[in-house]
Amino acid sequence: MAVGGIALITQSLLIWQAFSSHYRPPGPTRCETINMKNFSCTDVLPTVNYWYLPNSFGLDNVTNLEFEVNYFKEVLALFKAINDKYYHQCYEAFKVLLCVAYFPPCATQDLDPKVKIRRLADPLNSFQIGNTVFWRILPCKELCQAVEDYCWDRFIEKKSPWYYTRFKPCSQFPEGKQTCIGIPSNIKF
Image (cartoon, rainbow, N blue to C red; front, side, top):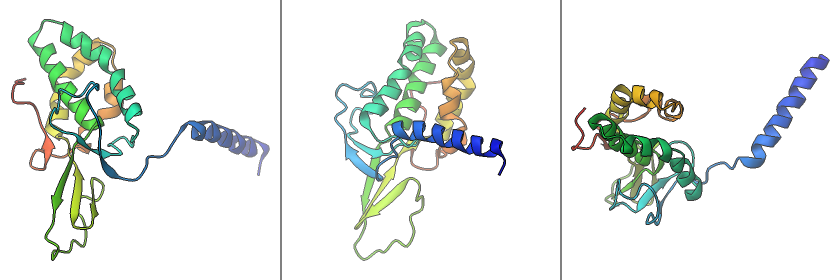
């Protein structure tokens, strides 16, 4: 092997060591009760207190989840402060998308003990313990698409490229025919 190849491998290992010292792989898939009393997403789903972890982004530490959601607060505050119908609707729609993607509610269904499931319909977003199936409720693709179609230019105006990195492509979210959280009824784009 050439000296350049060894140097590249060594450099890659050093980068991996630096990364892995801060990276903690997500824990097991689970649904967990989280006290959301002081969290920024409390008003989006006020009656939900059972959350699917890790979330779509592989995060399962509540402190880290809230830290990432708080990262978006500055832009949300800008949209909320502007007295404009579209900015207000973008604020409302994006907050729902953000909160449901980061803190996905967990739904459960108890099965008849006589029923045997051979394979879950969506193994990436569900799991089974005994006779109970747990599944992650995600934002609907239509909600993501509406935020992209109607709000993306406004996000760019506020220099917010982070939206693109986390919520693209919108096809990662289920269509409205499936169980998901869509565009709030009070929002009309």
